[in-house]
Length: 325
Image 1: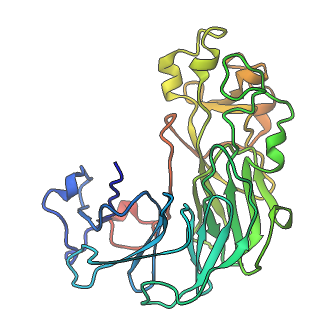
Image 2: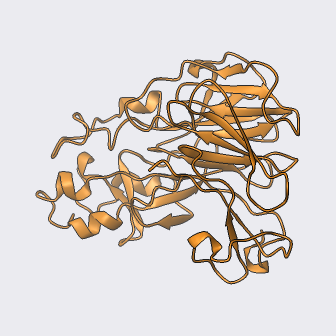
Image 3: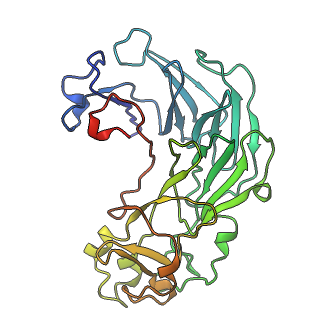
C-alpha cells in the first residue's frame, strides 16, 4: 500500500534497464526500470524540458513531486515536493506548470532545471464543487491556451437514490449542469469560476484520462463507465448477470469535439452488442437503443471497470516502428 513506481521503457541502447524489467512482462523491443518508489499516491505525470519528472500526488499530504536522475543510472536520486494540497491533473504550458486539485486549477512560473518554483501559486480556476465521488480533476491544455478540465459526475447513473437497487434515473439529469463533462477555460486568465468557463462536451461520467493530440488542438479522453448493472438490475433483467456486469459497460475512448454529447447517464456501450443502449434506469431492456442511437460513439472500447487513468500520444522514435505515431 502506498507504493508508486515510475517506469521508463524503450529500445535506446543507452537507457539503463533492470535485468528483470522491474518485474513487468513487456513486448519485444521494450525494457523497463523503476525510476522511483515510495513517493506517495502518484497520479498524472509530466516531463520537464530538462528531463526532470513531475508527479501529481493525490494524498492529503500531496502536491507535486519533482524527480531527478543526476548520475544517469535511470533512478531518481533527487526528489523535491512542493504545493499546498493533493491533486491529479498536471501540465506544462507557456512557461508554467499547472496542477489541478479537486476544487481548483493553480499554476506556478517554472524555471527549467529548478527542483521547485520560486514563487507562490496563481489560481486559474477556483470554487469547483466539492464532490463525494469522482472528485479528481484531470486537465489538458491546447496550443491556443484552452484549458480543458474534466468535472466528473458525483454519481453512478443519476438515480434518484444513487447506487440503490431499482432506483429510477432522474430525467433530465440535473447533475449535467455542473458536472458530467469537460469544461473549457482560458489557461492565462486568473480566478475563473465555473460560470466563466464553457461546457465543451457533456454526457461523460468521468474522464480521468485526458489529452490534447499532436495537432495541439484536438481533445481526446477515456470515460469510466457506470457500475452495478447486475447489482442494481439483475433481479429485474436476468441478462444482467455478474459475468456480464464484470465486462460491461465498456470504457470508451472518444475524440471530444466541441458540443458533443456522449449520452451518460441515459446510455452505455454494451461490448457484447457492440452498440450504445438505453440504461435500465431510463427504461432500457439491455438491447433497446432509443435516444442512444444519436449520441457520440466511441472510437475504441475496453473491458468494463478497467478505469483508464491516463493517456499520451507517442510522437518520439525510440519505440519500435509499429508504435510510432
